[in-house]
Amino acid sequence: MLSSAALRTSCACGLLAALTPASRAADSAVERIVPDVAALAGQPLTTLPAPPAWVEIPPGPSWTVAKVAADFRAATAKPPPITYVRAEFIRPDYQWFLAYIKWFRSLHKPLHMEYEEDAFDCDKYSRCFVAFANLLAEKSGETRGSLCVGWAVVFNDRTFAGVAAGGQHAVVIVDTTAGLIVVEPQTGAIIPLRDYPNRDTLSAFYL
Amino acid sequence: MKRLLGLLLLLSSLAAARTVAQTMQLPKFPLPALVENRYGDTKRIGFLHFLRQLQDGGVQELDDVDFLDENYAELTSLSLPALAAWLEAACGSVGVELRQSRLHHYDGMAYAQLLEVATSLAAAREIKEHLAMPIGVLICRRRLPWGDLPGDGARDAYLLIATERGLLVYDPPTRQIAPLPDFPNSSDVYKIQF
Image (tube, rainbow over all chains, first blue to last red; front, side):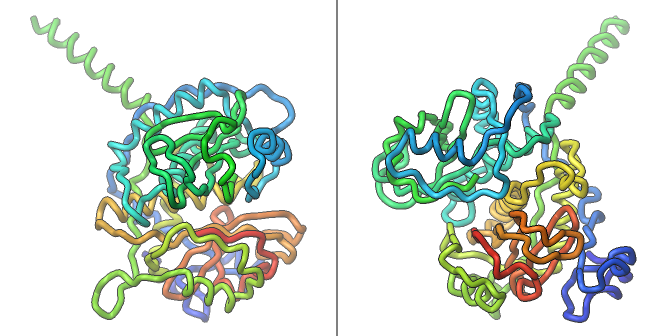
């Protein structure tokens, strides 16, 4: 909930965001949200199992979108377009990544992750997998970039990891130190992209 | 006997403390307030609603808009301060000062995903909401400055949230927010994904 002071400074259009005095001085046209910290007070914390120990990535050149694209081209004749924000990434250690998959599976119970069309379906599972991977990297102090972990939209031409053929689906794709790996985040099943039965029907990759 | 009991208590509390130290804690996932229709049900919006608002907001390339779900809820703009607080607190719980994150390799898509899945889980778990949460990502070229953010031509990403006030663009590190029609770079969008 916004404070009365915040409401008084909200913009003429009525948007419930507030300007701080400093920001108003800097730019009168920009609105800013005042986070409602009080909303969090007294709320129970969400406790998750202990995450796997981070494996440091040696200093060196970052992994780039161009390299990811090259890895895709090596694995499939029909690489998907890649949507990205930053052009450089950190490739996770393969062994850490295996431990992370196991950890992510252990979140299903405490987070009550259950498949439900639209509300929490395959793309939410995939984005959840990616979001927590990046969160753990940040927790470890990795600030050189996001992990090279993304999710893809695929036409499920063939059955994989218990997901029946037919229809659109979302899976996770990770460029690890051992190459591109496809993950079915609902089951934890993994397979190298070059062996993934639907590698030629990927329609988009969000990195 | 008392000494033995005391020792056992001490050992168990140490074990408990060790367990707590090893676990990871996040603030309770945020449940957004949803807009209701005239019948008191959650208002349902689909891609035509989004496309109309994107067009009104100045987005020219509607081919670059991806929808992963069929039906979405609409958030009340009153929810946003609580969602912003959650995102900052969640980052803080893993040692990341969100407001300073642009000093490193800030990736707005990662934060959009985090907030979207957190609200989705809260809504599905707490109110059995079956609609997707309308928290997406807008990737664009910063051709024009927007508040603290320069017009340097860099690629950047923001949260795009459907509310009763229309689509709102939100940048977590600067806390800046703008209705899409007022966002200066809406004509330089690479991709929008809900």
